Image (cartoon, rainbow, N blue to C red; front, side, top):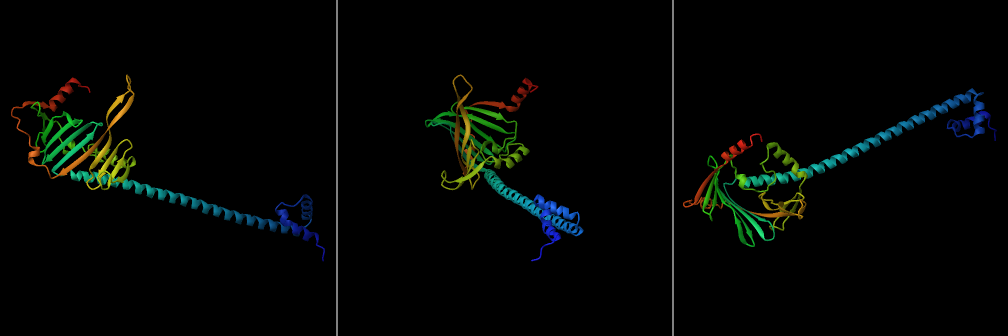
Length: 323
């Protein structure tokens, strides 16, 4: 077996030398030989160039892989955002169209020229208030009273009016005292003022408030379905402290809960002890009201008085001119 020359030995060590992994003695041997051998110097340069090229190739591959990984992360993030956006849009649109649909259906119901509405509110275990409204072709009658232990505790004046008349006037009739008070109304009275239905998106706000309410309500109401109250499916609108049970077919409320009607306080303090919330039930009939139901009675023998809201407003303006 031929003995290797010094050049062959050094060239075998050049790869390790270029990687700087030789021990001290071998490194000194290579460096001493390189000072004397042009051929081995050229071989070392060739090895270093190859090593540099490999490093460049590896760096390019690593950069490419990093770029791919970064793009994949961005794609994953964008997909996640898109999916969340689709889920959110689906949830929001479902909420919005349910609420909007209920409001549209309820509004359509009360475009009727003939309806009866009854509101029954439970104030406490023994006290119930009733409001009954008859409406036919602009004429209306509203009866309100409070029952306690199934006996009428307080009966309010019966209201009569005619929305087709101008100027608008309303009659308050106390049948027990046989008294009639005629109110001349300042503002244009609308049918919605005595339908008092807690439908979503009521149009008694300013135009922009109404739009914001329509767009914002889906965010703070939880919508579910149930069937226990009326034996068929209906929506439950949960606002946290209050709830509305809405008829899917008509958009009208079946029941509401949460209106605070009274508060008790700890003795000699302003600290609330207990709040009383009402539960209201609603009943509607359409095309059942007759002319007799909304006809004002004969006021013969009644004590008659008039009240002009405009005059009262003028007195207040004179009394508080800067307010």
